[in-house]
Image (cartoon, rainbow, N blue to C red; front, side, top):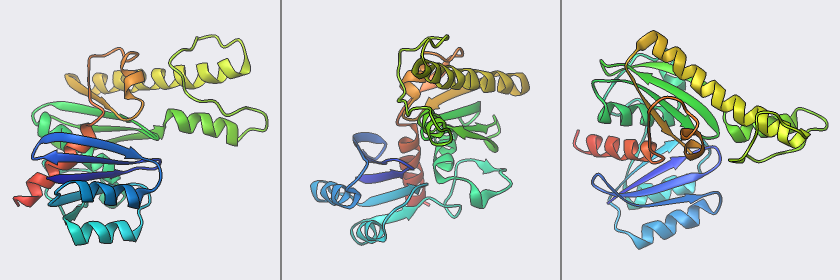
Length: 241
């Protein structure tokens, strides 16, 4: 069995795979070491892989290294695409995993992957399986927090599925600005990609994908587990390398 860890800015996501089949998924915001130890004690895990864009304790790395065959996501692994990014050493591991998943699933298509999490990332792979790059902007939660942190009087608001275009209170105006602004940004970015590349498959993933997919104008392939599946496929491919 494979153990896949996606260590983000806010959460650690853990997924268990039997070859290519997703068996179980967990998400933690604290007690990482205990939760990982519990997972290891409840399942027979042979291989593991880590994608890390947040912070991870050395004890967790040592634990996985001692109990599994551990792979770190890095430029040293074999990838299913040609990486044309100019600053490869600064490219986030989560983005590598997402592009890998797109290359495995749609190797002969232009693909735009939109990951709506703490940040919203845009990653583009062309029909030649070449990764060209993309964009990064603040996620929904980060936008609300920045409005609260960098002003004197604006309150901290949480995202909601129900909002109007015209906010009739300060709270509703914040919600309208952030939520409508995010949707407009994504639709606008997609429009620009279609103008330049045509015939693009759109993949939407990340924690806010369920909310956003109803509001994106283009046909999309939505999968909240897309990154985890990409990590597992990378693990499987590099085990066989």
